[in-house]
Image (cartoon, rainbow, N blue to C red; front, side):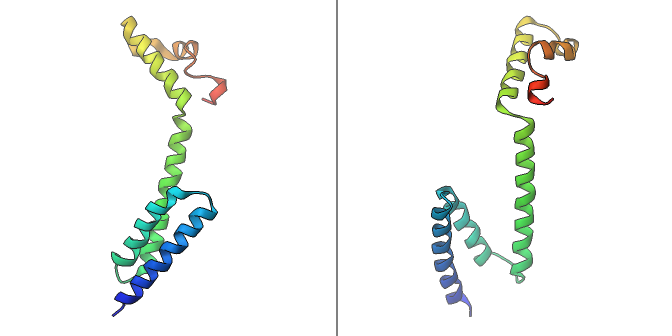
Length: 115
């Protein structure tokens, strides 16, 4: 009975989504936003509100973890770790014997990156 209503909601939802993406200067949001909109309108259980809030909570938790991982594994730090591991491998030195002092000498840990 609500099939036409869903079509209208998708139509206006996509227009609103594109408009908000243009206003916020984030065109990459259109595709995933459209997918989420269609999932919410066509593949949700009877209780749309609880399902939507659950998805928002799941997404928020995922974003927090992604930010945490990006803070811990910053690109320059990971590059230094990989370079140090490569040097240790080429030297044939056991990594367990290298210790914290060798990591500090190699610049892999220290005050500049907060670790």
